[in-house]
Image 1 (spheres, rainbow, N blue to C red):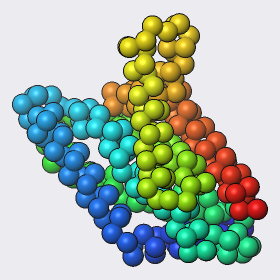
Image 2 (tube, one colour; image 1 turned 120 degrees about the vertical axis):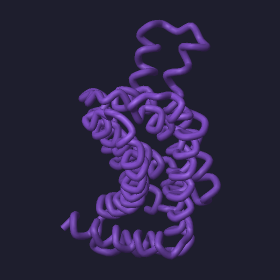
Image 3 (cartoon, one colour; image 1 turned 90 degrees about the horizontal axis):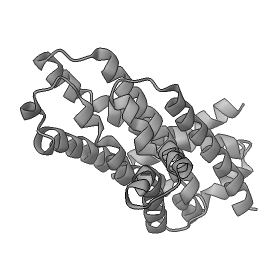
Image 4 (cartoon, helix red, strand yellow; image 1 turned 135 degrees about the vertical axis):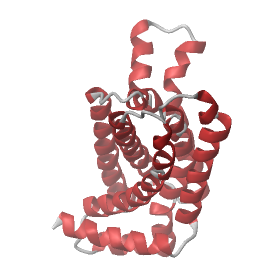
Length: 241
């Protein structure tokens, strides 16, 4: 029942996204900025290395900018239109609503990542690339997107302004991505420094860019995704009662 209800919400979300220009701008912006970084600033051709690490290194930063643009409307628009109460009064359940909205945003992220395949397809013939490394990089990109989207939904689910939702999510993602940088500027105990590195979204992503399928990083992203979605489910229930 939950799966069918979530699919219903997913279809509604995709129709609403298709009616706005946000997903198209997000996808186009991501593809252009990632390509400009890789071929111009990182200067892949001059680097003379058969690796896409430089390309995927930009993903965490770009996620900080584009994911809040997708999650900021998840709850705000429903409240503005008065449809969130209708959704919650229908026999769907809060979990199905959250999962459906999460799947809607992840569908756009999946399409975005699928379109980035044009870059590997373009450069792979130029050298002896490791296909296993590329697969690991894309897996890491999906897991990072999943955790970031779930966090974005959690941050914005109690806010009533898209601007506030965007800024709050962006700041939350900046903090979680840059957590591992704090020990570089502040003298911290080794245990605390290790903890900051462990919770850093960007730091956990580095293993994937080297082609390493780090089960610890995979588990962290999955646990963070599930926990954020669960808390989101609880918060919309409390907020609307």
